[in-house]
Length: 131
Image (cartoon, rainbow, N blue to C red; front, side, top):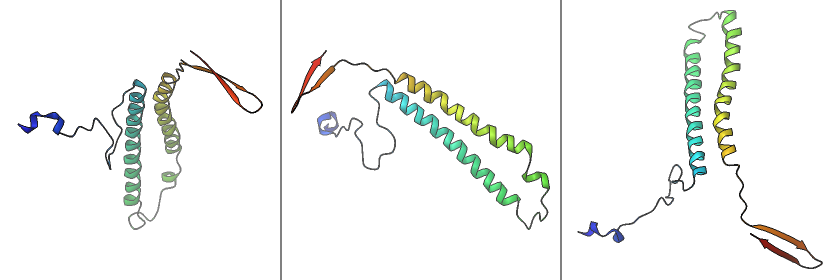
């Protein structure tokens, strides 16, 4: 019966909590776009970190001096690997740039409902408000 009275329960309405991770619910479409951009960039960050740590682990495991004392000369300096590590970051930056620029241009709308005309006199200022 006590649960039927909602005024007895604490309602936070998405208020920030101690040690809360993440964003609050958005009240504007611009902030919704910012949250979506954050989630997209976080996905790319996780993919990059998993790839880098996988490559680092495989290099440490397979290129041990005890396992292969002689390293082939084309294993470290190859045209293909240099093309891959040059083109891949460029493609990642392009994938990040498109949603960033889209959000930037969507948020660039400036609407001024109040214009302020400010005049400086010898010892005081005067302001005029225009709607």
